[in-house]
Amino acid sequence: MSAMTIGKAARAAGVGIETIRFYERNGLIEQPPKPAGGGFRVYPADTVRRVRFIRQGQELGFSLRQIGELLSLKADPATDCSDVRRRAQAKLEEVDEKLARLTGIRAALEELIAACPGRGALRACSIMEALEGADGAPMSPRRKEEKTL
Amino acid sequence: MSAMTIGKAARAAGVGIETIRFYERNGLIEQPPKPAGGGFRVYPADTVRRVRFIRQGQELGFSLRQIGELLSLKADPATDCSDVRRRAQAKLEEVDEKLARLTGIRAALEELIAACPGRGALRACSIMEALEGADGAPMSPRRKEEKTL
DNA sequence: CTTGACTCCGTATCATGGTACGTAGGGTAG
DNA sequence: CTACCCTACGTACCATGATACGGAGTCAAG
Image (cartoon, rainbow over all chains, first blue to last red; front, side):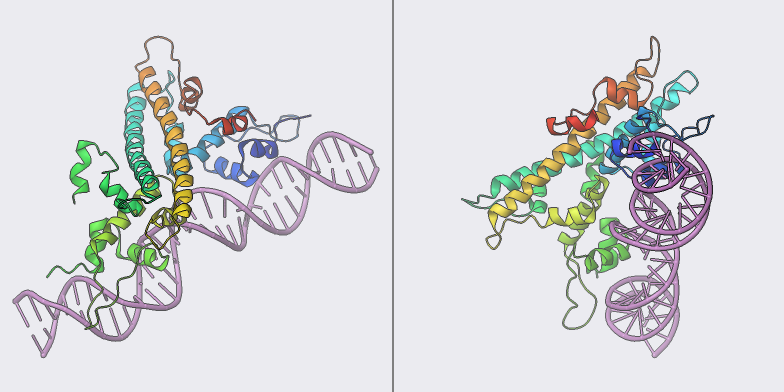
């Protein structure tokens, strides 16, 4: 029948078999035990979800190390809650930073698209100009000095 | 005096000299000509801004190839406007996809932080659970079937 | 009970995005 | 004019994140 062996797990997660093994070796997902009575390893649905999360994270510019940090944010009774909280808050700041930059790029793209049919003066001719013109990335006050370096 | 030679440009952009050269080799930035009367290449301020944009793009999960595509979105009279428009719109969709996923992760982190002081039932104990519970990443309809694989 | 597809595991290879290094030459402050 | 630091340019090397390959074992359909 349809035991979730590695090949099926890989297909379900949209990656290759070798990628699953690679993540196992690197501690991002757990390798299920070999069934006591012999046979192939069986992967829980959770692993498939985890792998999809990993791919998503990568597309957002997180390294595997950082994704591992995200995945290790667990608030169970055995872990120090204030520590998890601190780490989660640090990650949240990273995410907000990314959101701000991405929003800036989004605004620049929209400006470019608007400028494109091109009747009238072309205000923004390239994405760099669009970014500066619209002051694309609304930066948090803390980082403003960095911009004017 | 302070001619913007490669070393200064690199420091201004927050990268190494070799990185500047690497981007030149790969066509992401232009190599300024050697001054006719001899001397060192002088880098315009625009290059520094471009390099900073490249680094930002990478932190958002864009490859150098994709960043090159972003930078080549120019609406000048010599380029086909409808083509630029089409490419810009495709990039905009990519950006919106990233924004949606990132927003989902942000919500999951906030839920985790809220759950952390931990009086009462811990609703979300890990980021994966937080993602599912809050249905973190509102997926576009097109991708929904993929989720329920 | 065999054939074909799949797993397991180890090692090798690859693409991307840099980083380092060596050597030759330019520029300038003391 | 001479240290000393910088540029120029080519080649080599590196880390990350996979991807491929080979050989032995497993499973299940016909």
